[in-house]
Length: 249
Image 1 (cartoon, rainbow, N blue to C red):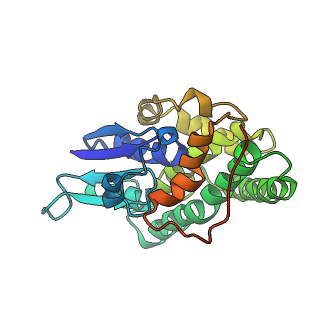
Image 2: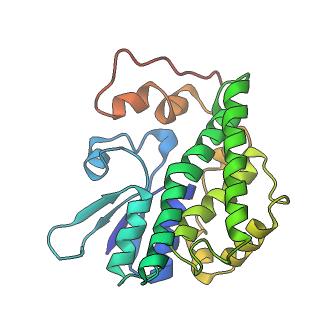
């Protein structure tokens, strides 16, 4: 059995999609990040970085004690290995392409879209530079994706961990006001993956209603749990030189 420490964010959905696709048994352990449930020492022992998702495999590869895996891209590769190499092409060239696009998502699409979400949806009003900087980069990365999907049906040719990693992030662009009409190949890819039975099962969980809106309203405590002082304290090393990060609800 695999425990999935989970919130229904794009990164969390990667893991449940992968588990449904490969048919490994799992149970979801939900967290309420608004209430700071991810800031506990217990969770820090599972993921030293303090971010969700993370998994604990109670029947790990190679046997032994339960094994924790952090970072969603690393989790996808671990689950692929556990499932006999599922959703990673077996040939060296195909495997490299899948890993390249997975790393592109982990290093580019996810972080840059994440910053766009922060500045457009959460940061105090008037952050024009941050909105423009990360909004432009988010659009540039969508153009990279569109160019690739104009050449091939899926990112690595066949459906793979790379598609599983990127798909939930593209699906979240509605929340930052992006339309996919300028990206027809991406729209085709999105619709194709959405019809997969495993994807339908894996995306049933909804996020907190407060986070579905374009501009969520957070209490000071919720803001602190996600972005501020409580988040820093939860890291275990609160830096007295860290800058103040506040937002008036």
